[in-house]
Image 1 (cartoon, helix red, strand yellow):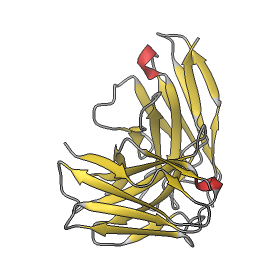
Image 2: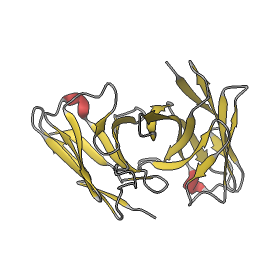
Image 3: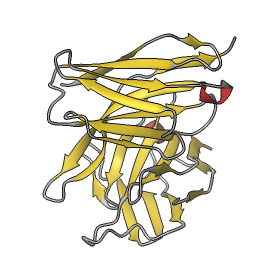
Length: 111
Length: 122
């Protein structure tokens, strides 16, 4: 089974400053087609999760461009260029290369 | 805009079967993939499985022996059945629709229901 590990698990952020979350996989998430099979989701307080990034680096429709995904193979990063107050919540990465597995989640909160 | 609504008992006894239904409104159940995800209290997300509108399924290996997903296109609904439940199955259960990217036909969870809380307790 592919294990996905996120870090940090807690991330205090300052509005206007950048932030990044790491996601590491126990196996390569590169598909035979060359694409990375990893998504990022945000669960805001009291809400259902919502997709931010799919296939490693593709921003989902309606997602602000301050969010970006990068990485390949086993190491991935979600970056927020300038954090806004509405970005607080728990961020999850999820691998889709073999079945589907979520990371443990990273709680982002305002300092 | 498609909306999803989970329904089912909020309390299930240990060793019994947990059954939930997701009703799709504002869109057709075909030709999409439909998924279930759960979240134990205070914990992270766990993928349960997905089903294609035609009935093809893909289950979380850790739940496969107890899980059955089904779809009813005439009612625009899909369902989850989890047998022999224990307290560890206590969670908020979300139904969701997979969205696809073109031209790669890559599927991600694009639409989520609001979730329904299920407690396993005698």
